[in-house]
Image 1: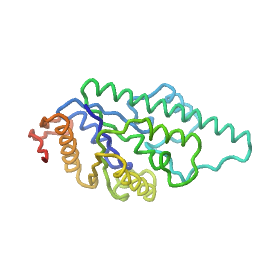
Image 2: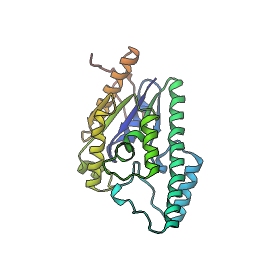
Image 3: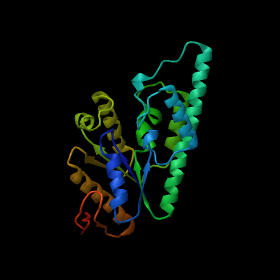
Amino acid sequence: MFTLALIGADGAGKTTLGRRLERQFPVPVKYLYMGTNVDACNCLLPTTRLARAVKQWRGAAAPQGGPPDPRRRKPPPKNLVKRLLREAKSSLSMTNRLAEEWRRQGVAWRHRRRGSIVVFDRHFFADYYAHDVAPEDEFRSWAQRLHGLALARFYPQPDLTILLDAPPEVLFARKSEGTLELLERRRQEYLRLRDILAPFQVIDASQPEELVWSEVVRHVSAFYRARTGDTLEIAHDTQTGPVRAATVAVAE
């Protein structure tokens, strides 16, 4: 089948729509979280669970779904030993991140071979493009450079990308995480991907959920029809209430 990436800043509705597609879309759909928030993952390596347990024991805050705010990057320690220890820690973290990313891609390949549409909640290439692949600032650690190279040269891009776009004020009101400035920066990072990922669709996520859902279904159905020549019918969803069954209209 094919892969679909739902991307957007926190609060855009990616998880809600991704899970709804898995329940309600009339062909098999598998939902796969592709961010760094361990608590949201539905496919996780044991090493990542262990690292999360250690961080919780130390009282560290849980990571958000995407890359950290670059402005909060700590300067390199002046002490050589501390700097080497930091580099070693960064190396281990990046090695595990790469393993985690390829593990989830392997799961996606397996679902595709079995005939399912794979819906990505976030995507590593989209989340890290502005930070590790083509960063605006000149400084990148060697681990970031390695990560960017792996994503740009080897990591598969989604077959279809849908950006759930909304003003930062709307996003913050839905999910009070980060700041308005950070949310706007994330939003602009995703919008710049229009020239990188294709096909790429932008949906106004500030609309009511049912309107956003209808647009997502329309785009996914159009892509499905382009691949298979078939039309689709949306069935009743017992978890969200009755949905009028009707053949999805696909623009020719």
